[in-house]
Length: 461
Image 1 (cartoon, rainbow, N blue to C red):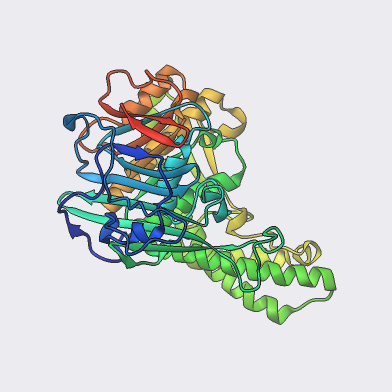
Image 2 (spheres, one colour):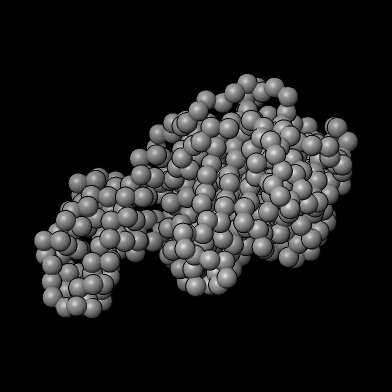
């Protein structure tokens, strides 16, 4: 998998954008104020909207901050984060350090929302919802996520803007009848950028509580893991995924119509079949190659963190076909399965074969981990997978990813928790990590920056 830096080049680091420590609360900040300064450091607003107090992020701040030595600037990663009307955050300015950044708080206070904001910016979509309107704070019509990321002496300011846009003729009286759409814009150092050009620029590895069920969850979760990695590491594979999903949607629309109206449309279907075979084979070959690369890394990590001598293997399992890294073979196999499924697809009104039905299988000691592995073995296999993801991203992209751990540590027993932290959070090559938890004392003597999250505010300890 070849990785290539995309978009505008990084700029040399000058005066660090963003305040020290963190800040939250206060009145709403108009997006004009956020956009007034280049590169995420807002200057004075050009004007004030009637009925709204202008309060630029770059204005005077009262910051709660740890001592200077407690928050050194990361040499690579996320230096600062600013939120406006994102989820339950009216306004937040936060500076992060290298290594572990720990966010402690009770449930429903906003810990996960912080990680979601970072993931939504860098991965171009939320890992929690497909409804963009849910990302805006209740009652708000606009929201923003700003981040300054650094690599050595270089830095880049990324910005995401979300706005509710009502279509002409859609009055505000009954938004349920004509819901507004969400307009999204992204920029790099003040210049517009296509969301797809952000993928892989600053790699991210996610670890959510649901991921602990990855081994025994449905195949969709395992496909998603592979596709998020591919989207960040291989531009060609990312394009194949987009094209495959587009032709799959179009083909399903035709099949639904034929199912409802009766009859057949071989010429129309043949056009979609050709595109589905072409891009579907590309997706399968890319996923197969990824699993064959990721699997040995996960097996090595399993050996590091496992109590027993469990041998872990990962296998890509195409629906109705055999895994191959040869595109011509993959195309031929997919074309055969499509031909066999023609009558069933007309009867059901949907595409029943292809990469959207594929799976990845975990094998422990030559047996299916889903049905024979204990819960402890299954969870250890997931931990090994996440460690392998971090190492693979580092190997392919040449830099460590930002690791987002959402309330996962509390789900692990002390031994597995210590092994995970030991594998991820030590050494010069350790990833910068944002981790949420509901209790203190999970990190022992490890050096970390601690923050307290309470009702949409964040305070540095």
